[in-house]
Image 1 (cartoon, rainbow, N blue to C red):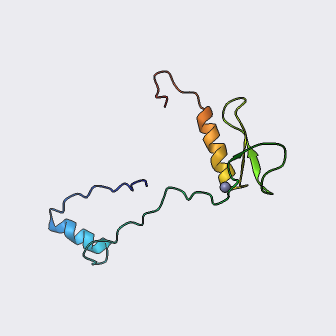
Image 2 (image 1 turned 30 degrees about the horizontal axis):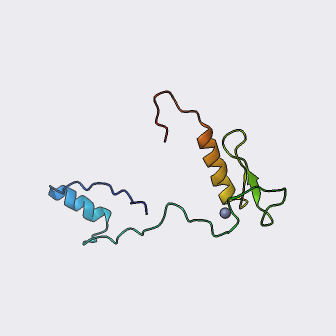
Image 3 (image 1 turned 45 degrees about the vertical axis):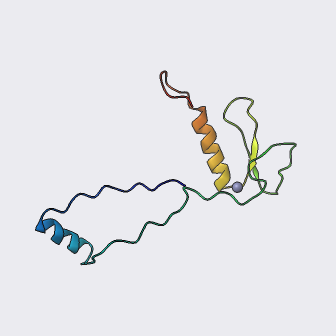
Length: 105
Ligand SMILES: [Zn+2]
C-alpha cells in the first residue's frame, strides 16, 4: 500500500507560533486523527475489464476497446468511462519517447 507523504513539522519555538496555531485550529489541542489509509485508486471489480480483444464483441455489453501503446500492441476491453480513461492515459504515457539518457525500466 502506498504511504501517504506527510509534511515535516517545524518545531514551535515562539509564543507567536503557538498563538497562530491555536488561532488557526480554533484552540484545539492534542494529536490529530490518523490519515485514512486508502489505495491510490480502487481496483475495478469487473471480471472482464482489461481482457484482451478476441473477436469483435466485448465480453460484457458496453465495454470499449482501447488500443495498446505501440503499433501492433494488443487491444483490450475496458469499462466505458473510468477504466477506459485510465487505459488510454497509460497507453499515451507509454508512447512518449524517452529522452537520451533517461531511465528505461
Ligand atoms: Zn473496469
